[in-house]
Image 1 (cartoon, rainbow, N blue to C red):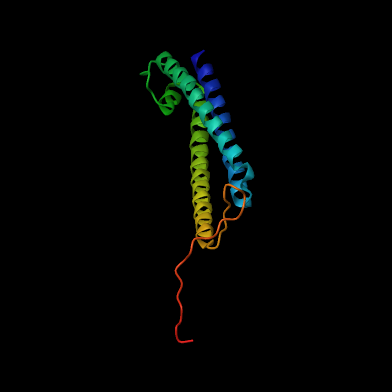
Image 2 (image 1 turned 60 degrees about the vertical axis):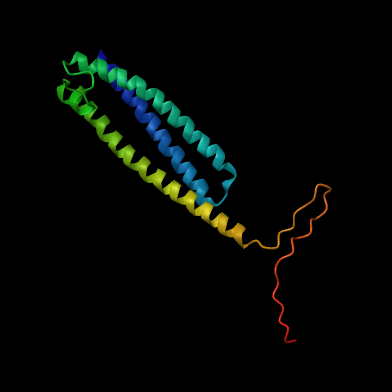
Length: 159
């Protein structure tokens, strides 16, 4: 039955959104710990889940179109419209999916914004730290320390 297929696709998408929420929270824990060693891995995991969500979205769109057409609705009907036209118990189940998607979307947006802010603060702090380093010695190709470039100096001639 098309409504069963739609429900399965919605469950899959909900599970992926919950996994994304977990990965974003994991990324935030790494950011707040100040230990950035695993940040690249965490970011890649978030990107992997996002790719899986995009793929699942195609399956959900096809299942939703089939369910909508079966119920006599246009193929591009929204989930709320499909739920309104669906018989019991599908109507309540589809509304529950819709409500869960709204909650997950809000939580994901909040965590994403928080992570972006933490990354910006971390970047700014790194830039400020680097700007304070003045007497940095570098190495030549032979492995010896390079002389620092001469800097302008003020000399008080009254001595």
